[in-house]
Image (cartoon, rainbow over all chains, first blue to last red; front, side, top):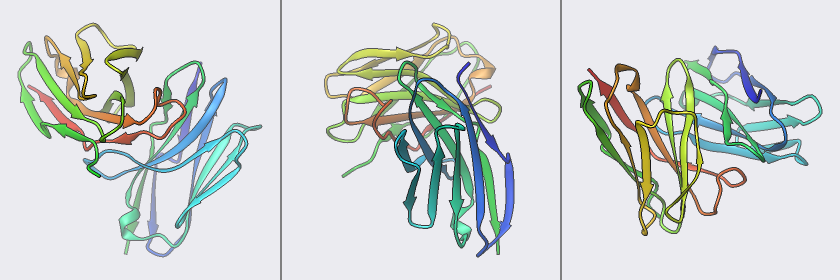
Length: 111
Length: 115
């Protein structure tokens, strides 16, 4: 069964600290993996999209990694800001299926 | 360039009623997908349209339907509303014929509350 699991479910950190969010997937055949940021009450916004051949991609303070062998991805946030408080959703695309969404990690950054 | 526009932003309906939600994609985008988001289930795929044709459909009952017009605008309809249909309904557009391999741009969503 195609599944995407994210951990932790929620995370609280202090402003300025780094954090890493995890995404494990059992999707086959794999096409690409995306990370989205979703602020409360708003639509998701794309952070990165990676294909099978890419193992790291950055977008400002956000860096995503992908290990296609172990079917794991991580999103690292450097020097967190209050505006990073949001839900982060991992999404995997399979060639023969629709987009498969994780349930997200809720990140709260406190001053 | 305007983003994906969804209307209305908020909606309250009673059980048994029907509702129509609207989505205008980014200019030039021809693919539109709809998603339901609830706290317990996360984002779930409803259906995808390209050039007025439904390309993919998720595992939702027939009460959920949609269509796409020649200008790429899309509507989704939910009939005989149930309390469990209360959710944030998101629309996403992309320029190509499938959102599987291209980036999808989401609208702000329509918050539907069924009472």
